[in-house]
Image 1 (tube, rainbow, N blue to C red):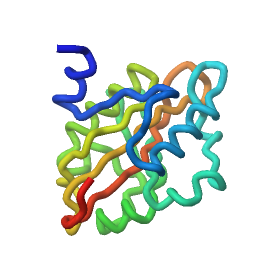
Image 2 (cartoon, rainbow, N blue to C red):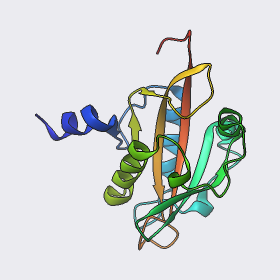
Image 3 (cartoon, rainbow, N blue to C red):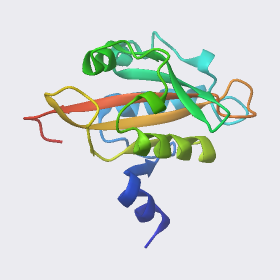
Length: 165
C-alpha cells in the first residue's frame, strides 16, 4: 500500500502541492491563493488572508487558532454557512466542545505536523443540521513567525442530500 493510499483510506486526506488539482473550482482558487501567499518559511501568515480575493468563499471559510498545548484547535472566525449548520456562532469553540470531532482533530494534526495543505475526499457530515449529508474540506496551515503552525484556514464544500459529487 502506498503512503498516499494509507492516508486517503482512514482519514480521507489528499496532500496538496502547487500542481495538485483540487476537485472543485473554489478549492482550486483558495489553493492558488495559499501557494502565492507563502512566506520564506513556506507558509502564509494569518495576516496574509486576502479578504478581497477570497470574498466569494468567505461564508464557507473557518479560521482556527492552534494553541500549542495538546494542541487545541479553537475557532477564531467562522463563515455564516458554518454558523447556520451549527445553529450558533462557533467563535471560541474548541474541538473538544464539538460532537464527532476526533477525526477532524487527527486530520488537522496532519496539517500541523507536515506543514502543508490537504483536501479531503467526501466525508460524512455528522456535526451539521440536515439537509447536508457530506462535505469536503481544503485545509491550509498558517504560521505567523515560521516557527510553528499557529492557525488553520479551512474551506468547506457541502453536499445537500440530493446532490452528487
